[in-house]
Structures are given as structure tokens and as C-alpha cells.
View (cartoon, rainbow, N blue to C red):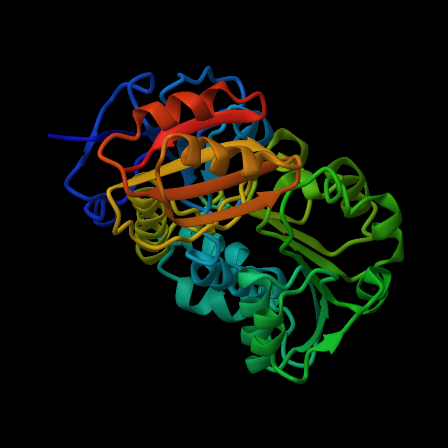
Length: 389
Ligand code: MLT
């Protein structure tokens, strides 16, 4: 007997799906699913059934998901911060090297001459065309020191780069994990002015969209290289292509192919493969499925992008009820009055809020929690009630 159903909008690693508990089965129907797993499918235009309680993104960015609309419907959205960070970091390091030496041009030339019996002689004449520079000793600006940015800063330091880090919202953990030599930059313009290489690792939000704009580009060194393995909308690519054409910027390395950059000079484009490693896909799938399983079976919320973090552990009493409600005064007292009026005892309870939304888990010793659920649902400020156990 299954209690819940999940569906996948993109292929999700089997090693992760194997982590669903035995009461959760797969369905191919989005309408029939209690929870959705997604990687890059665009969900903004989708209709959601009333059955849906959660969406988990196997990845960090959530700009393909309407998180505010889902919060209003009482649907929790999770992501998997850090799970693919090493994979992305490794591609950023690769991007630094590809931008510094014409490795791609050299490989292409060799391919074009493979039928030439003189190739071994030609090589020595040709190779000067593909000469470049080393990254050792160069200045790298890292904008955003979350799981990925922090790893990039660490690896670049180990490769002998002088790293400048900018992140006004850095977590204490991330700060502890940074090498001491990383220069703490308080004004992002100093990154633009000083650095030879600039890599962006911030989420795509209204406040970060287009942050690398004409003005930022105008501050950069003529030889600067910009790396973008976060999201294309962070860069005003029209302004950047203009700067590349005018030779004001040396190279743009981006993981996002689109028509604005497709034909531009000095652009290295990869097809959004930063997180496409076996390890990253497995890690993301395992983390996403663990989050969904804990939410379905215990009501706990970890790594949500639109709900507060809530952990009441496993439920050891007869019933647990999850209530999504507006973050307004006196709702909690209404819940406890309802429980008292039903002559029941609350054995455990937690309440957390995030912006306008709040989430309460209540454990009660009761044979039948249905009367309670019906009464909670009648309250004006309640968005959704779920019988967890
Ligand atoms: C991310 O946001 O972490 C990546 O876009 C993940 C992915 O490639 O699916």
C-alpha cells in the first residue's frame, strides 16, 4: 500500500530515486503526483493539481520554478545546495584554463590536419598560434561565496591565483572554509577594477539580473576574462558582446548557449554542463529525494527556498498534523484552543515563519485526527492542512 506518488519532469539519477521510502511510488502523471522532482524543465507555465505538496529541484538554481506562486498554494519547493558544487567548480577551473590558452583552437587545428603526413613537422611551426598565458599569479575575482564560489576560491588559491572574494551575504561556514589568503572585497567595483578573471556564483534574482552590465564592464581591465557558470541573465550579454567586439574584454566563458552570444568573438560556450557529472547528478538526486521523503513522512522541511526550515524529528505519537498558514498574530493560540476543545493533548509542536508564510507541526495523542483537521481548515488564515501521520 503506497501513501504517496512522485513524478519526475527530467531524468533523475536512479541511485537517488532508490532513496524513496517503500510507501512512495512513481507515477507518470503530473496531476496524480504528490511531489515533483525536476532538473531544468521550465515550470512557470504549468498548472498544478491540488494534490501537489512539494517540488524538489535536483540542483541549486530555482529560476525555472514559480516559487512564490507555489508558496501561495502551500507547495514547498526544495533545492539541493552544494550537492553539485564540486562538479561546477571543476568546470570553472577548466574554463579558466580554456580562456588562458587556445586549447580548443589547437585541438581543432590538429583534427583538421589528421590526414597530413607532415603533421609532426607542421606542429612546431603552428604551435605559436595557440600560445597563451598562465593563471598562476593572476587575480581572480569570485562574486558570490556560496558552496560553488567558495570551492572555486579554494581551488584557484591552490593553483597560485590571487583570489578576491565578494559576498555581502556570506555564511559563517563558507567564511571559515575560505583560504585565509582570499582578499575580502567590500565593494564589488573593486573586483571589476582589479581582477584579470571574474567568475560569478550568485543566484538569479531580480536584484542580481544584469549585474554584469555596461557600467561594470566599463570598469574592467581590457584583458579581463568573465566566467559565467551561474545563469546567463546575470550578465547583460548585449553589452558584453559589444565589449568583446570592440576588444575591451578578452574572453567570455559561459555555460549558457543562446543567440546573443552564439556568434560573438572570443566566447567559449558549453551547453549547461557544469553539474553534469555522475557524482553531481547522484548527489543532487539523493539529497532531493531525502528532502521529499522526510517532508512526506515527517513533515520536516530542510533546504526549502520558499518555506522555513522545520525539524520535529520522527513522529513518535499517534498523529502529526502539518499546517501551512499566514504569518499573522494569534494563529497558534487558535490551533491550541481547537486541540483543547477536542479534549486532546499536544505532545509536541513547532512553528516557524518565513516572510508572509508560516508552518506549524503539531503532534497529538489521538485515535482520529480528522475532526481537528476539519477545524484547522475552517480558519481564515490557514492555507493548507496535511495529515502527516
Ligand atoms: C544548478 O542550478 O545547480 C544547475 O543548473 C544544475 C543543473 O545543471 O541541472
